[in-house]
Length: 415
Ligand code: NAD
Ligand code: USQ
Image 1 (cartoon, rainbow, N blue to C red):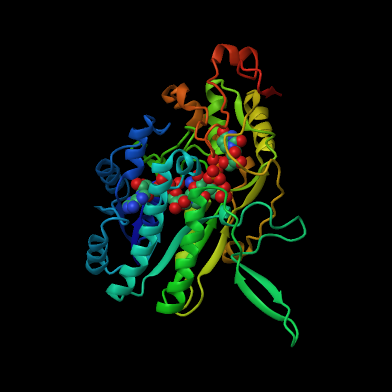
Image 2: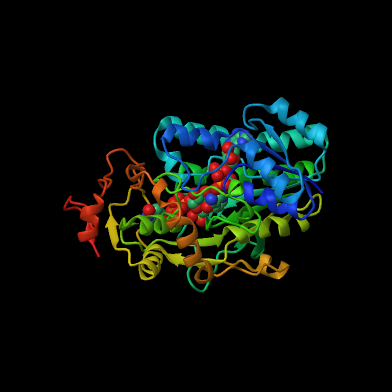
C-alpha cells in the first residue's frame, strides 16, 4: 500500500512509519516539524537524542534498504500543498497523527489554547476536505484519545464501549433503541479537539462516504520498537518534561535521576495505557481492516491496561527504590475515578498486548538510566495549570530529595 503518515516525525508517528515501511508499504511522511519547534520554545529536549529528519531517513535506508519519503508541510495552514501531495502520491491510506497532543501545553496560556484548536481542528478538516476535493478513496486512520469519553461515565460493571453507546429513547409509541456516538466529557482544550474531530468524521463518513477509523488511544508508554532499536540514529523520542512527558515515562525518568515520583494529588486518577510496540501494531491492524464506504466511522479503544497513577508510582518505586511525592495537582480533574474499558476489537483482530510487567525494567535501564545525564532538572515539575492561580510544586533539590520525599513548602504530603 501507498501510505501517507501525517505527523510521522513524532513519538507515535516515527515508529509507525518504520513499522509500516518494514512491512513493505511505501511510506511518505508529512510533518511540519512543529513538535521540534515546541521543544525549542519550551527549552527542553527529548531524553533520547533524536536525530534530524534527513539523518533518520538515511539511517533507515542503510539499516533496512528501504526508502521513506518526507514532505515538510503544515496540514493546518497549507491546504493547497496538502491537496497537491494527495494528488501526486495518490495514497491508499492516510494515518493522521499530526496534532498538538499535550493536554498541559494546551492549557498553558491563551495562545497555546488557540494554537491547539486551530492546529488540530483545521488540520483534520483540511485532510477530510482535501480527500473529497481530490476524489480519493483513501482509508483514514486517525489517532484520537480515551480522554474524549471522560473519566466518570461507567463503573466496573459497565465498561466504556468502543465509540458508540446504545440508548433507549422513550416515546408514546414505546422505547426506540439507537446507537449514538458516545457522549464526550473532555478534561482539557487538547482533549476537546479530539471530540470535535469525531463530529467531523461522522459528517464526512455519512456525506462523502469517506472510510474513517478513529483510534481512541490511551497513554502511550515506552520508547523503542523492533525498528527504532536497530540503530541509535533511529531512536524514538522520549518526552519527560512537565508538559509533554506522560506519567509512566516521567516516573521512569524521575527514578533514574533520583527525583521523587511526582504524583499529582492522591494518585487516585485511573488511566488507560498501551506500549508503543502495541500502538504501531494497532495501526497496522486498523489499516488492514478499514470500514466500507458509507459506514459510520469505525472506533477502536486502543488500550491494553488500566492503572491508578498511585499504583504506577508504587510499581516504579518497587522496581527502582524511588521515593514518592504527592504534589498539588496543576490540573482540574477528578481526584479519583474507576476505569473499565472495552477493547475487544483489536484483540479479536490478533493484537497480543505487551504487559507492562514485561517491559518496565528494560525501559527503566536501557532508556531512562542510559540517558539520564540529558535531563534538565528544572523541567521536571509540571507547571502548566488549568486555571490561573492554581498552585504548583517548587523544584526539588535532589540532595534534599534523597533525604526526604517532599519539597520544602509545607504544602505537600510525602509518602
Ligand atoms: P507528537 O507531538 O510526538 O507527534 C505529532 C507530530 O505531528 C509531530 O511530529 C508534529 O511536528 C506533527 N504535527 C503537528 N501539527 C502538524 C501540522 N499542522 N502539520 C504537520 N505536522 C504536524 O505526538 P504523539 O505522541 O506522536 O501523538 C500522535 C497522535 O496520537 C496525536 O494526535 C495524539 O493526540 C495521539 N495520542 C497520543 C498519545 C500519547 O500518549 N503520546 C496517546 C493517545 C493519543
Ligand atoms: N500525572 C501525575 N504526575 C505526573 C504526570 C501526570 O500524577 O508527573 C497524572 C495527571 O494528573 C493525569 C494522569 O497522570 O491524571 C495522566 O497524565 P498524562 O500526562 O500521562 O496523560 P494525558 O495528559 O491524559 O495525555 C496523554 C497524551 C495525550 C493522550 C492521552 C490519552 O499526552 O496525547 O491523548 O494521554 S488519555 O489519557 O487516555 O486521554
